[in-house]
Amino acid sequence: MELPPPQNPHWHRDVDHLSGLIGHAVPVSFDPGILALSFVVSFIGAASTLELINRRTSSKGLFNHLLLLGAAITMGGVAIWCMHYLGNRATILLKGEPELQIAFSVGTTVASLFVPIVVLLVAFNVVTATNAVSWWRIGVSGTLSGGAICGMHYLGNASVRNYVCEYDTGNIAGAALIAAAASTAALAMFFVFRAAWTNSWWKRMCCAVILAAAVSGMHWCGALGTRYRLVKLNSAVDFDMRNTTVIVVSCLVSSGPATCVPPLPSMYTTR
Image 1 (cartoon, rainbow, N blue to C red):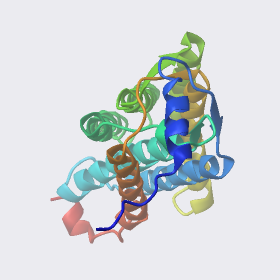
Image 2 (tube, rainbow, N blue to C red):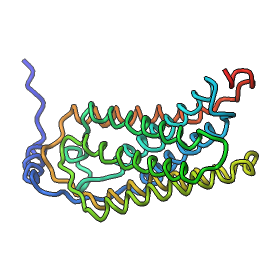
Image 3 (cartoon, one colour):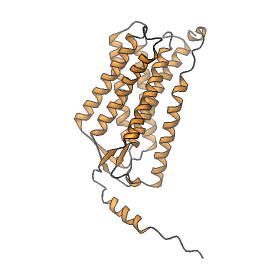
Image 4 (spheres, one colour):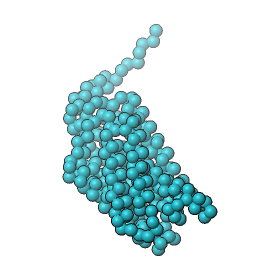
């Protein structure tokens, strides 16, 4: 009869020590490498979004509607949702102990993916309803886009299952202002100068940088004003959920540029 493998005596001491943190706010630090990567992810989504909107030929036609839907998906799903959850992987609780890292519930995480897509679809419909530049439409669309960014962020934080998140009011207000102002500025630059920038990809990329800055700026402004009060330690199931989230983020990011397909012949765009 085989004897069971000896257990690590330090494991129980570590768990007992970490259990003493339950009910307390846990110190937070950030991984600069993942932080930078989260901005790149947001930029990929924003650039794909503007490219899809730029390929629309009118507000009518099935292909034009599909382009707008694709723009909402790349912005909401890649630039915002993927950035948020990858950015949360840059958030390190205490010294990075696996039992203390952020874990998410499935239902709210999935809901936080679809909410910004729906809001952005409305926002992009508003701003592209006419070919003429309309400042009020740009303002409404920018405000809705900022709301989608903020809404996804705090809905995503609501999916955290092992912490209670506490927020500073000033950071919430600042994050909302950053998201709405930068989104409006990016959309204004894109649509006001769209005709002149049709063949100038680098200028569209500048708009994408500003749009990605709206997402990242809002996220990190909100993150700096967030305290994490520990509710329970992670389990093996929570580890699996964190890894699954990263896999989904990777798939969505890789699909973002793939949505920028070559334009169809004009006869399809008006049907």
